[in-house]
Length: 300
Length: 163
Image 1 (cartoon, rainbow over the protein chains, first blue to last red):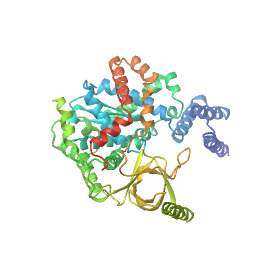
Image 2: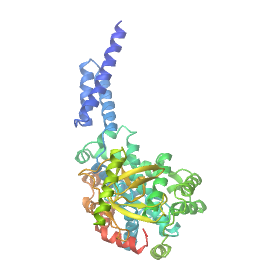
Image 3: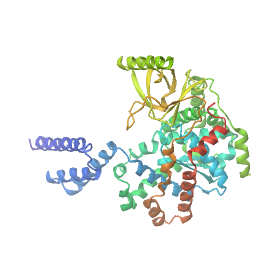
């Protein structure tokens, strides 16, 4: 009898906590406040402080997963990822004309994505490993190793459009939503200035994902699909990304970069070819080989 | 006189379509290209500004067949439109002729001057990251923010894109 009563109380508390989350979020209750609310209710019901704290953290995390992530936090985290990129992957390449050129290609494709108002910024990193990646909020990187493997501007546009695709589809933010850290992201950016430890943890999740583990495979396929579409919409030859991937297949320095963190190249190339043959059949665009070669000659 | 007649007819067509339950979508990219065929290689009908309203006639894969405010029909990438009405209201106009130069929204680069957050700089300090890495992010942001939409439009035009 006592066990049944206890179960009823527990069920009631869970329903109460869920109800509070549903009611409070649209009203602007912060995720941390939600956690405190649930923690307090658990303490009142006679739970020990440890249990109550865990329940509060779970509620806070759940509330964070349901709340929108602010753009200012996304950009702030992107800045942290950018710092780590220059620290861990490679220094910023010294040629300002080349940096400007990559920014022009990047901004041209980003304008055709679905988040054209983000403050996109592109950088060339000095690293022989072919790689490109996007931090949250519009920070996009490509290595000198990747640029040297490309033949024309449509290949560069394809790669940058793939990265823009990760940002427009909010893949890193979706990755965060699978972690217990999500609660902090739905609060104002000022929270990071007060809690640099939490901020560092969040940046670490992003850098480990981007530099070591890789995003979910389905995100990579989606970024390929969106990227090819964006390149086509911009007016570039949409086969640029696929051609670059085929080039990577033939390269011998396959340690790290897109080889390490992305799905098998053959799978990606097949999916891109299917898209080109079905949804973009007959689409032609510019390759701008001459303009690209002129810029890339500066690397040799 | 003829122009007024065409505009009136277009308005009637649009209102009839909306009353019949046709779905409205709104351009969410800087410029949406409306083409007369389903693939991106088809001739360009018009370029439509961000926020403009289009009437969906059919959804065909990644492309929507749409009707413009002036009655013209064409196809648009679904990536370029949203079912959500933009804040401040979507317009029915915003259509430019295909000879117009494609430009990029000013907002995209205007927001670029945001700068590296205090948290990022503190993180670098506390974790012993070389200050040069912080400096590189600042240089990256400065260069990007300094590229005006007109420079992007010029680059695009010189590249022969959107023809």
